[in-house]
Length: 480
Ligand code: SF4
Image (cartoon, rainbow, N blue to C red; front, side, top):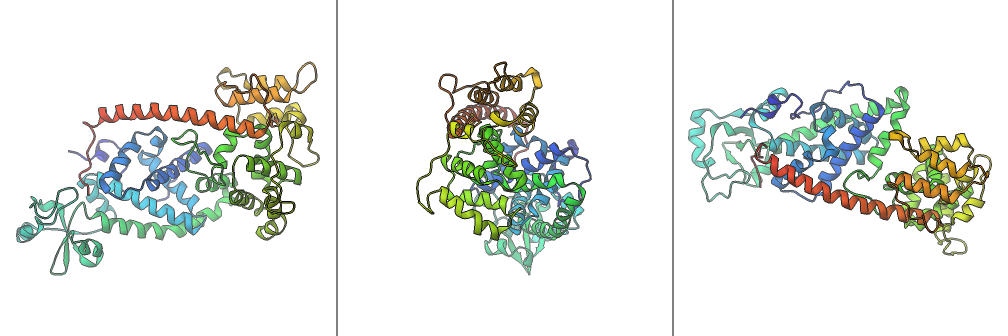
């Protein structure tokens, strides 16, 4: 059978990613590719699978997942690798996790590809392992047949070795295989089946990844000179939880990581406004801090996560030392661990609506104080509402704020906003919204229900597609 890479020029082939791609990508594609790769890493690392056969099965299932379609093409694979590589250059921890996940990905792909692709990869990368001559093979066959390969039983059942499957490898390049008695050691050389060759090749791949790290860091450090808009998305790719509402999992806990997914989807406009101000100014004035911290506390964000979230932002404007000296106390106070040690409650809508911001403050209900143009811009850019497909969401919300009676009806506007964000569902149709925390909890309930339904549909569809494709798919040749 011909290798898939020859049949399909877009198929992914084994590569060391040593050439930096030069494609021109839009900001959205750039982010989506990097984010999809980081999600793939998460899916591979959170499954506690070590059995190569099961890893290959997992990968085969991910191939059917729409979330990863963009990165399962030759160019998408290379671009997404380099985007996440740049994002991961930010710290030794993220870089290390990146290299480990990429090495795992390499191993899986090696195991499920054809011998011809494997040989091409070695040839392209100057890796030379000697194949056995007919004569040499005849001398060793009596021994080789008692060294089982992946998924082919144990040494008590003799194999039918094929000459072209074996390579002569210097013993020092595969000590683990020798130690595990998986390969024949003869006169100082190991005789390694092509499937077991994944071990020395993965080691070589990992070394190559580490050698490229410095280059990635150099590029990452120069990004602000070229296009500073890339910095935030790159930070978010490794900071954000690698799950999304559009993916297979709705985060249920509000943490320093999940807030990036939950805020745009489940925060009411008043809290989203504070969240966005934090992300852009890396600071909030006193009242905004109190409202926001109590809201987060009411959403079950624990103290450590809240401190980590505020530190990660404030340290960019005031530095770590000042944050610890002047701002961390206020968070602990709001959580009831300092001063009067009271269990302070989150503010309700009425309190927030009455609290009008002044100067460069950001607290308050946006439906009370924003003028028409500012509110319109906030709904479109901050809240990501559009008029696409004839939607009149924005008009509906604005209609409750700028009406003929000159009365800003914040509760109705907020209900309309909830409908716009939740497929026209409105839990506040009968009893008006009371607090931002009530909004958040209703939103979370809705999204979890929706995700559950979507997962069930997706599972049924994947099972159907997998059953249909099984006959045409090249099956992995290996297992443990
Ligand atoms: S109505 Fe309440 S929850 Fe909605 S934005 Fe205003 S203060 Fe926030």
